[in-house]
Length: 295
Image 1 (tube, rainbow, N blue to C red):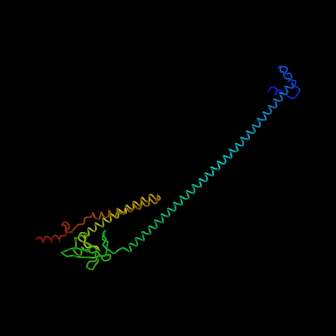
Image 2: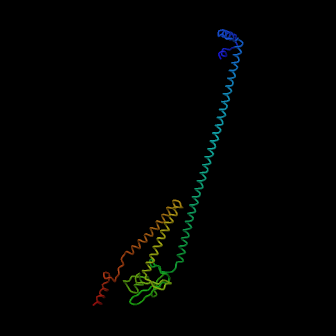
Image 3: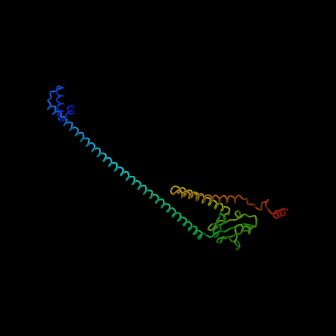
C-alpha cells in the first residue's frame, strides 16, 4: 500500500522509488516495483469500483424497499379507510332500519289502540242499544217480568217489572215506594221484599239476591284488576317505555276508580238504618197506641 501511495508518473517519483529500493535493500528492480505498484493500484481501483457499485446497489435496494413499504402502507391505509367507511355505512344502515322499525311498531301500536278504542265504543253503543229491559235497583238488576212480593196484615201484595219500571196497582213505583204503599213507614225493602226472576219458580229474598250481586261485582272487579296488571306487564315486555307508562297509568286509574266505588259502597253500608219500630225512634203516637192497647 506504501508503494501504491508513492507511485506517480513523474521522473521525481521514479527517482524516489530507486532511492527507496536501494535504502530498503529490496531485491526488486524499479520496473518490477512499478509493475507491483500498478497492479496494486488497479486492484485498489477495482475494489473501490466494486464498493461503489455495491453501495449503489444497496441504495437502489433500499429505495425500492422504501417504495414498496410506502406502497404497502398506502394500500393498508386505503384498505383501513375503505373498511372504516364500510363499517360506517353498515352502522348507518342498521340505525336507519332500527329507526324505521321503531316508527313502524309505534304506528302499528297506535293503529291497534285506535281500532281497539273504536271497537270498544261500538260495543258499548251496541250494548246500550241492545240492553235488555229491566229495572236497576242499586247493585241488583231486575229483568223485565220480575215479580215483587210483600206480606202485610196477612195479605200478599205483588208488583211487577214492566219494561224499565216497576208497576203496582197501575202506577209506577220504586221498591221503597212499593213498601210505603203497602205498609207505610218502618219497612226495609231489602228485607221485606221477595223477588221471582223470569224463569225461576220460587221467590227469593231481595237481600239474598243483593249479596249475590255484590259478590259477582267483586269477582268482576278482581278479574279486571288482574287483567289490567297482565296488560301492564305485557306492555312492559313488548312495548316502548312510553307505552309501558301509559298502560301502568291506565291500570292505576282503573284500580283507583274501583277502590273509590268500594269505599263509597262501604260508607253507604256503614250508615245506620234506623227502624222506626224500635222504641228510641218510634213516634209518640205509635207508643201511645201501644200503651192504650196494653191497658
